[in-house]
Image (cartoon, rainbow, N blue to C red; front, side, top):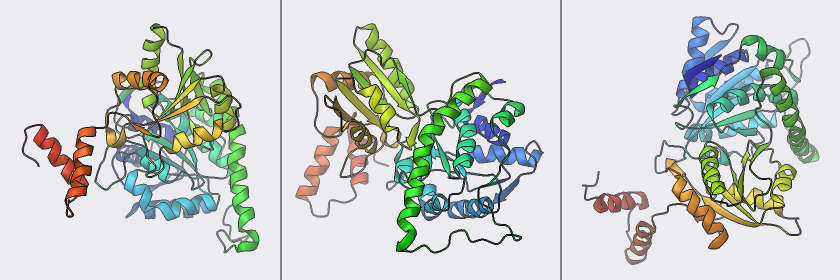
Amino acid sequence: MLKQIEGSHAMAEAIALCRPEVICAYPITPQTHIVEGVGELVKSGALQNCEFINVESEFAALSVAIGASAAGARVYTATASQGLLFMAEAVYNAAGLGLPIVMTLGNRAIGAPINIWNDHSDAMSMRDAGWIQLFAENNQEAVDLHIIAFRLAEELSMPAMVCVDGFILTHAFERVDIPDQAQVDSFLPPYDPVQVLDPENPASIGAMVGPEAFTEVRFLAHYKQRQALRLIPEFCEDFAKTFGRAAGGLLRPYRTDDAETIVVAMGSVVGTIKDVIDEMRDAGEKIGAVALVSYRPFPVEALRDILKHAKHVVVVEKCISVGVGGPLADNTDGALRNLRDRPKLHSAIAGLGGRPITRESLKKLFHDAVHAPWIGPFFLDLNERVVGREIHRGRKVRRAGSTAENILKQLALASHLPPG
């Protein structure tokens, strides 16, 4: 059914259609509307046979999810930003125990300084925790990926994280096709757990593992992620047959067949990038894009096959691995490593803390990658004047103060406004 609906509420309806049996979450912007939505569906009786558990923290939320999943329930939770960091120990535990929990991550910057706007810092902080990570470009895809995530997590018995850009998607109203219960039931079978605590058949889950077995345990976790590289395209095909539209997959190429420059990105920025590519194509430039849906597992071979004929690859990402560069650029570079005539890779950091990523800035970025390439990560729309003054201050004054507050004062003075 087509609805003009807020992204969070659309996701809540899709999650309810997956028939979770336990939902536990602690509110944190920008995921709050999602768990409020599923909570209302539980309270009204629209979602039956489901227990909504109020918890006192994000760590408690995932801890309850771990216990419920180990007891054999289909489980859902959600978080964002500092909330994900607070549950970090449990994030690793859920993956290490092989529990098929599905979690929405409303992508948001990580402080300090405090910032509630969107980037991908939170998802990247847990990229090595062992969860499947799927990134949505728009709210239709966010709805569809949750349905796919439950099936994928339960098939592999490992947790899955659906990453949706905070505010840009969670709070945006769009036309979304919400499937009916019969469609979801035909795609997502009843939950049949691989492992379950049963008093009639006592077993341990999460026992101590020493050096004699830990390597094998970690290898098998990696092996299951590699299996996901095969299952994700298969489930994408099944989804299209059931729902009549494409969704999921490892990645999606856009106008790449004859492209000499290809842009790699994840999440909602892909929509803006496509608009820029269309404009540049109209001007005669051979440029295309690849939208990564699956970041973990990382689709090395699939990405390499698309990029291998390009001359330039521009990676645009909303994260910075401080002291190194962009993690997505690093992974993309790894995918290109064994090519004989590999394209030149250009890394761009954009949209940190919710900074707008404009078509004008992207168009210049893609042009410069070919005609005026840079070395190392390039920070899109960086205010070099403000940065230069702060560097100068730090060299001249021992007690230079907080960088964040100093930059805000500079910006206030530049705007002829009193700092506040």
